[in-house]
Image: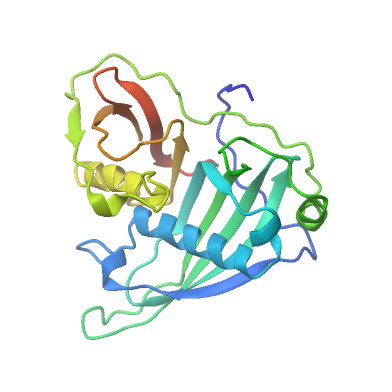
Length: 268
């Protein structure tokens, strides 16, 4: 796979009549910030949950069980807040023989309570994740014929290729000094990798200094480049350009890029 940056574009809709998996989740107080907004790391956690629930509802947890996420795109069109019930609809938007773009549409039916008594418009978040099927050694492998047949029926795009959306190379340190992000034991999964949602705690820290970036509809893109194992030290490099913030998560003294995150307005 070669990486060549491309311009932003809206996420594709579901193919007419295509099957999809659906599940519902409650928004909890642990999912929201001080303003009761559902955080981006919480959205990533919903995406992990529906992916796990989806594969467990099929036989592919036996034949095609190991998947890693290379990229997640989150388009917040109407933000979520607490209390609410989130409905997730998941389907395949594009695929090749070793990887897929899995689309998840999240809708939130907002409610009122003593702490948030004002009625709110229902929420809408569109997402897409580039998933790679790997074997038990962690190397990309082919989908089984049965999995390919089922997923390919959901989409007409069967020649999916990787194209980076974020700039991978970190710039020189600018006017904002690099900062360290302290990783915690609870940030890691059973495979000793940093949990996908934990990366976005870095972005949520930055949002405190750039709240205007989430005032309206916005897009977040995270691309995972290298694993972050227990004991790693993460340095965050930041670049604010007009209405866009880009972060590079740098590993150790070598400052190797582990992940890139961008936050900006929705593409028109």
